[in-house]
Amino acid sequence: MKAVRVNEYGKPVQIEEVLQLTPADDEVLVRVHAASLNPLDAAIAAGYLSFMTTAPLTLGADFSGEVMEVGKDITHVKTGDVVFGVLPFRSGTFSEYAMPKADEVAIKPKSLDHIHASTIGLPAMAAWQSLFEHGAFKDGERVLIHGVGGAVGGLAAQFAKSKGAYVYGTDIPEKAEHVAGLGIDRFIDISTERFEDVVENVDVVLDYIGGEITDRSYTVLKSGGRYVSSMSLQTPQEDPEKRGFKSVGFGAVPRAELLAQIADQIDAGKLKVFVNKTFPLAEAQAAMDYRYMSKAPGKVVLTII
Image (cartoon, rainbow, N blue to C red):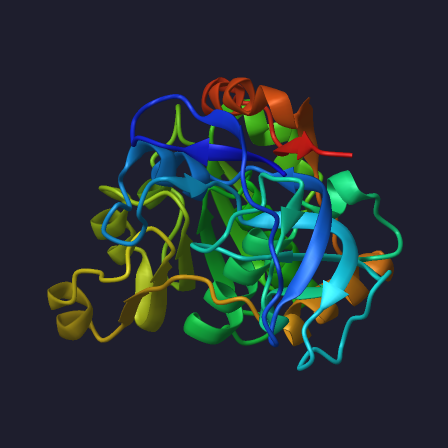
């Protein structure tokens, strides 16, 4: 089968023929129709996560496709089902076939085509888990989202607004119009405003950008607030301990029941996902280059079928 391979970190990806996959008892063989790009893929290809991955490897985490075969322990999907999901740090989805484990796959939203369904997996897991689990969000709280115009930030904003939150969001000006459609309360253009001049005493900060934003974000949290970062597994603790708020870093964990819940919300018209541009599998490097340069909202997707 054809797959997008990283043979050497920091070098262009290659399209290669690799061995066909055979599912284990707890795995599902999926014929991939579409797979979307995440910042994670660029980080892996560059070698920034070489302590967690080993080249050569197949890139890709998010996918949508059709079940071709299931292991004997799989009960929630069957051969012929149309599915979506996410399998980070394993066999890769930028390929003609992928092999998620039970927790990494669920029935695709009926209202979406494969291209749009392929954008959901990792962003939805990260957005939900950062807001509701690590952020312990309560209905009606005040939330600041850094990177609100991205795939994760946009879903987090929709989750928060559906629970009555007052949402501030930071991003580049090119994403202002897109973010306005998400219904947040205050967009902060990072090219002209410092968020510290606008925001104060928020309950939750969701940071999908990282860097120097961490320490700056600490200044706008109220006592008892929560800072959550998807950019690091460990965050500075001295200031949170002194000022009485929580600071955590995390990595998203796939869960089939959560994927199914997200699919239901999409089919009910409660969540929107967005596509920027599509590329065929053979143009994977061009897709990665475009994603790095593009300032437009929406995910970049590889089409396999």
